Length: 172
Picture (cartoon, rainbow, N blue to C red):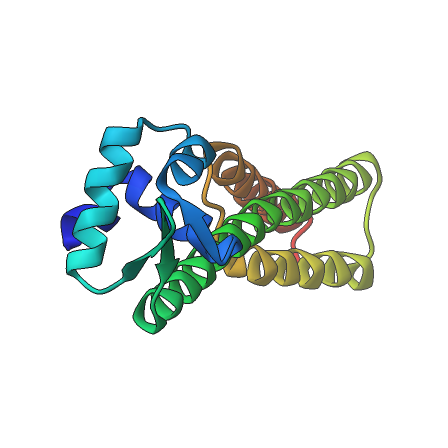
């Protein structure tokens, strides 16, 4: 039985039967874009596992999902929906993390330009030191998963170090 559902066609047959209450095997085969013989053999295996049952009306034999088959189809649909939603969430998460790191880098670059271009009072230097510390904390909370995010995180760290060095030269 495991072999049936690790195949793409087995899953497609189950989902096709879940959409329409009863179908002829040739209808199922055309739905899943498979051959009649392969579909017939898979349906026969599913019938042996009591996932589907066949009903003969006249000369035509129809395939219907049993209660066990309906539960299995529902579980499969939920599983697919879960995978798709997680995939959508994971693609959405990567971009904002990198955007935040880019904002951090831009802010730190502007701070670095400010402190390099003019002489700072001890109060201003302390303010920039606190800001650099805050960016260090924010940066440590970021967990980028791709190369660009990791490079951005390293860039932010190097900017913070550079700011700290300039502030030490100002003797804060």
